[in-house]
Image 1 (tube, rainbow, N blue to C red):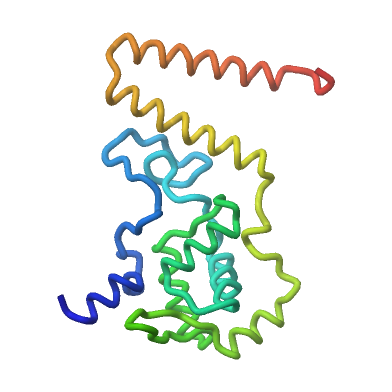
Image 2 (image 1 turned 90 degrees about the horizontal axis):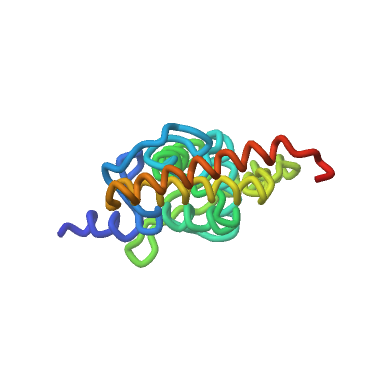
Length: 196
């Protein structure tokens, strides 16, 4: 294997959305059922964890790089950790944003132990200081209760897909009854008075 290829394997894929699957990006369910774009974005069961505007990705990358140099994969991990698991930007949004920030001289690429990293420049720090009133994107988020509910919906979709894939006719029918009962109970919650 060429040395350049090894560096990209260790430090993350080249710029652009074609970086492939990264460890930690979550399970891939192959050709399972697609539940639409819904509240979770595209892809099977909603795809990535929480979408943000392009400006949010840029701001998040700069804020994380202000602490220490990192490669693309480490940046995605750190943002996910700081958001409490609610947001993990995809390679398709991170690497183009890194390329843009580098073009604007807000960050620069460095090499450390044959791994390509990115570090913030003085211009990048000044850019952050001029916007010090900006709330970090991982804090400007929905309430934890909503995130928890969305996570439960996603897990239910995954479980239902597994029943469809591996269950017999009776199990699939029981799963349908369970989901129908859950739907009725959710509507009953909306029908209740606040005092109840």
